[in-house]
Structure formats: structure tokens, C-alpha cells
Length: 418
Image (tube, rainbow, N blue to C red; front, side, top):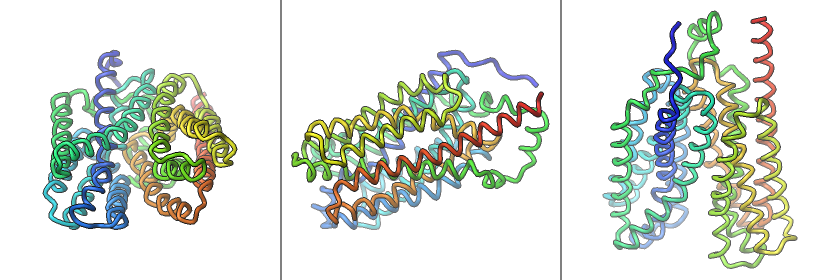
């Protein structure tokens, strides 16, 4: 069997950069509407509860579509699905910009959710097949950092345009234009996104094992405990993230008596520390065999920091800094997490596995926000940090079981080859 030559640094960097840009755009469109809520309330008189339902629509559509889109990626390839997803984002911006009422905004949320759905199966399929193994950890690192940057950029972009022009509709059209620009860049560089070229992730799968994988039923991967353990890992880690993203700022305000304008910096700090952690994690992932150990140490350290904040014993500014620093451990664990899922995925089922396990992310966002919101309404301010820490501990348990399963499978393969 002949394989293509290992890609050069320039080829790998090009593919990684393009996937980073695509992933950043998907996180940007998570935030297409939320920065515009004050403008929509002013124009239409909607409540925050009504507008919050738009986010539920987005994540339900995205989560359901993500699990299904993995099958589509495995069947038709990742590149055409990526182009369709970016087109759906552009349509979401156009529909939102021309919405005459709630139904139009719901349709925009549906289109944005459909666009977001395939990104993890698409991204990881292309990275696993196009990027050489020695640089794959850096690819996962850039992928995670770009997502954080997408989240950070959207509020500034959307609210900035709406404020400057006095029109939230212009902001939505600006979002559509951004999606079309990213789509044009992807089409122009489509050769670097061709997942039919290269198969670095599956070079070890040869002979009888490879033949058996081809003959398996497309749903056979669902019988693997590792898939559902990875799903639960994403669910719990996202519950923790949701608590910090949405409720850490008001919780710190109430617990430590700081102004909200200051405590809102905790989310920015958390994301920036997470981004720095991902850079470190990209170097670390290629040097560690038992990835679940890296994940466990980092997430447990973050859980301890969040628990310390919840105790209310720190000075206000120190508490804000410690909560932000918790993002570092989660960032370092990110590339190891993605590599662990890669190792757990059976040959030929990359898209399906990533689609299924990453739908745990959407489910976590959908369910965690109401729970933590209710805790805040009940004045359980410290519970935001305790709950976030507990969710991280539960995600560590899931990752540990995945790592044990991967190690056992590798040992069985080594013994059969001996």
C-alpha cells in the first residue's frame, strides 16, 4: 500500500490555520444574537426569557445536527460539509438582519445552529487526515484557541457595529459578510482542506483490523463504551464552562461586593488564560503517553481554584484573578482531550465519533444554564463555583475511564502483533 509523503511544515501550518479560522467563525456565530439582545428589546419589546429561548433553539439544533453530521462527513467528506456550514452562517446573518419579528429570529437561530452542527466532525476529520502526527497536537491547540477568540470577538464586532451605525440589522449583515469572506478563503484554499488526501490518523490500522472496520455497521461505534465516556466528559466539562461564562461575573459581584463592570472581566481573563494554556498543551500532548493523567491533573487543579473562590475567603481582586487562572488548567488539558478522543475513535469512524461526543458540548450548554441560573436566583452565589468545580471532577472520572480503555486496547493490539 502506498502512502503520500509526510506533509511539510508549511502544508501543515496552512491546513491548521484554515481550520482555526473556520472554527473561530463557528464560535463567533454562537454569539450572533446575544450581544444584540438590548437592541432587540428596545425595538421589539421582548423579554430576556424570550430571547434566551433563541439560544436554546440554537444549541438543540446544533447538538442534534452534530451527532448526525458525523455520518455525513464520513460519507461525503469533510470539505463540502464545511462549505455548506459556512453558507448556513451567511444565511443566518441575512435572515436575522431582515427579521420582522420573533419568527424571523427563530429561523436565524435554526440556520446558525445548522451551520454550527458539523464543525467538530469536519475540523477534526481534516486535521487528523491532513496534518502529520508530530504536529497534530499543535493543530488541536490552535483549534481550541481559535474557538476562544471567536467567542471573544463576536460581542465586540456585533455590538460595535450596532452602536456605531445605530442599527442591529447592519450588525447582522456584517456577520453575514464575515461568513461569506471566510467561505471565500476556504474555497480559494480548498486543496489544503481535501480530507481525501492523507490518512495519518489511520496508518496503524492495517490488515485484518482495517478490513473488519470497513465491514462493520455504520452504527457499530455506538457500542463502544469509550464513545459514551467521551460524550459524558464533554457534557460535564461544558457544564463547568457554562457556569463561568454566564454566571461567574454576577456571582463575584454579590460575594465580593465588586462592581459588575469589573467582575465581567473574569470571563475575558478565563478565556485568555485558557488560550495560553492551550498553547502549552499543544507542546505537552506529543510528549505524554497517558493523556488522561495530564487531563486529570490540570482539571483537578482548576477545580481546586474554583472551590477556593467559592469559599469567599480571598480579597476581591485576588478572587477574580484566581477564577481567571482556573482557565489555564482547562486550556492545557484541551489538546490532550482532543488527542484522547482521536485515540479512542475506531478507524474510518472519525466524523461519527467526533460528532457524537461533541454533541455533549451542546447538551451541556443547553441544560447547565437553567440550573446555574436558578442557583443564582436562589442566592446560592458560591454554588456557581462549587458546581463548576464538581462538574470538572466528574469530567476527570470520565476521562480516566477513556484512558484506561485506550491503554487496554493498545496492549491487546501489541500482544496480537507480537
